[in-house]
Image (cartoon, rainbow, N blue to C red; front, top):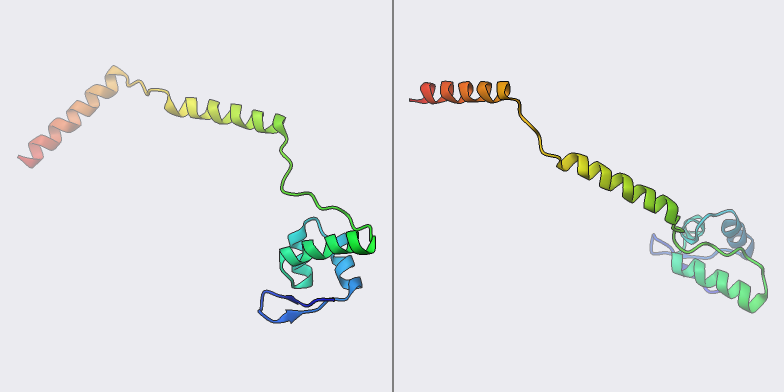
Length: 112
């Protein structure tokens, strides 16, 4: 078995039992790599080698997160609705306009 370089810079060597256990109990290639102290690329290459050269039936990890189109469309609709609400003009009543004018007049008098 070839040695792989871990995150600490030191060479890490795992026996097949350690690697297979880590692979089969992980949800991602990165998780398996972390358990073994090797890089994600090394873990993926090793799993591929076990499958192709040795016929070991390791599970296939999903690549990236699968997109649920329905969820994505629902999220987009909700986001657009939220943005439309945020972009609505704010209407000021006549009473509040008068209050603002009085405040501005008071400020002008104080600074003069």
